[in-house]
Structure formats: structure tokens, C-alpha cells
Image (tube, rainbow over the protein chains, first blue to last red):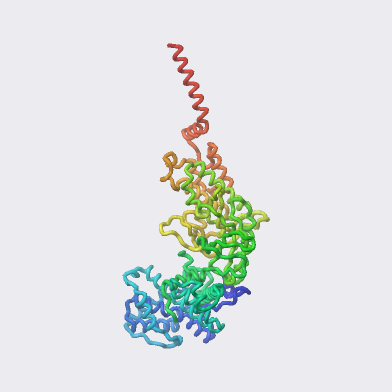
Length: 252
Length: 345
């Protein structure tokens, strides 16, 4: 399938965001910056956590390395070298992180922070808390396969978290804050005693209003997550594979 | 940004999976199983007030073309009207772009479960022949199944055999047109996800793929299919799967079966399996009627085309076929000899 096909949009399928791989090759500086921003948003946490665990670096060094890595992506135009036919972007970036950390070790130099990396507020404190909350046993992720699995899981977590955030923004914009709260209560918080009936009583609405709101929120969440995912893939085939991995369709 | 726990991730996956059937005539009842590239639900057709199986495909296409193609091809399958093929009732697109189709809700047992209750070789072979009937019919209409395996065969409460999940089917040609020799690589219907089993055995899960890549189930998929040579796929690819299915029927559950059934698989049947699962398509049976004919001949006690018998084997088969008459003649001769001996004493 050609790139042109990949970006085509029909009536039922609204035009999708452009792939970051395409966008970083654009001559439009704004588009390049937006693509890198999308890439950083989705990948900085997995990269940071990966460096912390795989390379066993303390938080401040891991922060420097994470920022340095995205500077490197930009300066050395790593995305331009990515070939969607040979690997997944996710795997490619993880391998790039490994060689980046090894090079830094070799050079023994301190990475420059910031540079031209898109100006994102990277909440390293939050990422550190998440690592603590997950209580990961480093001994269990010693093999290359389990590291790949760990990186994938963190990437899915990051992707879904971004999609949930997008959904929250969408709900606010469409005056559907209650819908988001229902979605949060039923699908995110994991309160085992929650039910449609309880929610309908709590919000003084009918059960069918609750189920309709949840159906809408789930549909939008799915659409947003897939759209973000499509943006982070280099080809339709990679998108299909990554969608299966992200939504766990292979495992069920 | 909210931190999502592992449990929250799972709930989100489930939530994103649940199809929104608003705007369709169906009401979701329960999730039944995960099949190739999608989930099968039990649903109620509110218009006709009947239970149907509703399969929702996982990934929406980039544009409407994929959905249109899937719908077009599902229509071809819907025209496969045969008692051994699960009929497709309806096809459509959900609000989120996912394609769904509905089929007859089949109550019964999957072949891999049902087989434990069939303890005689002839009964198992008769089951196999009914599978051949359905697959042969589809081939005659220009459709390959490409994922024949025990998990895709259902045996109904009255012994009816149904070939399910035509999700990987490939249209070789239009139902009404003349037969070309090779598959159209763009005619893939619903492609399946990759989940090879941990132990390398065939599982319910088919292997995934995009166009021109691997589809099917390890152990049941032909070598050319495993290599992703979609251009080379023809009826002989399904013949390979039928051979693997026959082998499954002859071997599966034998340890638990009665002693008379535990003996080694007959050489003629083994030869049929080997011919059907030959590495090179040219060495396999050319079509389904050929393999069905060989199995029928075996059932009738005749020589099968796949195996050259030795004199001893021929004699043994002759004896098995005419055992009654041979024993009758032997008894008669023995009696005559006994009378002669008695008279000459």
C-alpha cells in the first residue's frame, strides 16, 4: 500500500493525522516540530523508564539521557533513517536508545539538556512515582524479550494515557464532562462495586443514559487511540500490527 | 496526565473492544469467543427475533475501501448455500468503522472436542467426508477456506457438520464466472492475528498477516501458505489442510479410545494423509473429490489411489472385504474335508 493510500480518507473514516515518519521529512518546520512533539509525548515515558530499568541509571542521569536522546533523534535525523519495512518504529527507537546510552557511556560525556527538543513539560517526578507504584522486579525483565515486552507495555500505557487525556479534552469541549466522569468511574478507576445502576443513581440519570454515555466515550477513546497510533506508525501494515499489540487482540 | 494501572489498561482494552451496536438491528448478548481478527458475540436480531453470531473485526481500515471490499467479499460468501457451510446473514459497519457480519448461531461442539465421542475409524472417516463435501462445494464456487482446522469445524446436535469461520477465505473467482487457476491476492477477506501456540501445535489461533504474508494455523497451513506465497494458493492448499485434519481425526484421542481403535493407523489411510500433505502442491490430490473418493474407497474396502499395496496387503484387504464369504467357504471346505476324512477312515 502506498503512502498516498495510507493517508487517504473516506466518508466514514475521517482523514487521519499524518504519520510522524512522513512529517519529520517535511520541509515545513512547523510540521516537523509538531511530529517530534507527538513522538516525544508518546515515547518519553517509556524511554525514561526503560533507561532506568534496562540501564539501571539513577533518576537524574536517566532524565538527562531521556532528554539527550530526543535531542539526538532531532539532530541526527534518526527518524529519517527509519525504514517501516524493516522494523516497527517502537523497536527501532528502543534499539536507538540502547546505542545512544552505550555511546554516551563510551564518550563519558554529560549529555546536553534541552537543545532543540520540542518544549514539552516532561514530568519525570510523575514517571518516577509510576515506576515505584508498579513495583517492578528488575530480575524479571532481564532477558531481551522481557525488556521488549516491558518497553511495549509502557508504550501502550503512554498511548492510552494520552488518548484518555484527549478524550477528557474532547468531553470538556463538547460539554460532556459528565460523560468523562462516568467513563472514569466505570472503565478507569476499577471500583469493583460500581455498576450502571449505581452510576445512574449517583448522577440522577437513567441507566440507558449511562450506557449510552459509556458507549460514546468508549467509541471515542478507541477512535482517538487508533488515530494517535496511526500517527506513530510508518505504514498501514505496521499500524495493523501495533493496533493488535496495543489492544491485546493477539493475546485474547 | 492520569497514571493508568495494568488493571486500568485491561479495562480500557475491554471497553474499546465492546461494539456499539446502536443504529443496527442487533442487541449484544454475550461474548462467545475470539476468532480470526475479531471477536464473536452472541446477539439478538431484534427484527427477526432470533439469536445470531455477530463477528466484529478488530481493526478498521485506513479508508472506506477496505470496509467496502470486506462487505463485497462477505456477499460472495453469503452465496455459499450449503448445509455444511455456516451462512452469512448480514454485513455492515459499526459507527467506529469496524466491519461486522452476522451468521447463523450454531449450537454444537467443536470437532476437537467432539472427536472424543467418536470411537470408530469409519465414523471418523464419514465425518471427514462431510467436511470434504462442504469444502468441495466452496471450491466449486471459487472460494478457498485457508484455515481448515478442528476448531473451525462444528458438529451439531444431530450430527450435522458445519465448516465455520470463512474469515480467511479467498475468492479465486466470482461465483458465477469460469474458474481461473490462481488466487487473487487482493481478494483476501478477513485476515487473522498472529498467535502461534507456545508448543508449536496447532491452536485455535491463526497466524497473522497482511497481504502476501503468512495466514493460517501452524500444523494445518500448507507450506506455500506458510511462506506467504499467496499467488500460488489454489485448492491444493486446502487439500493440505484436509490431509492434516484427516490425520488429526485418525490420531486424536486414541489413547482414550477402546483397544480395537488404538492400533496403528492403516497404511492406506496414512498414504492418503501423506499424499494430501505433500510438500509440493503438484504431488497432492488435485481437488477435494479426489481425496474424498480415496477415503470412500477405503471405507468400501477398495484399494486407494494413494497407496500401492503389496501382495500381502492386497490379500489382507481382500480378506477384510469378503471375510464373511471367505469364512463361509473355508467352513464349507473344512466340513467337506472332515467328511472325506471320516468316510475314508
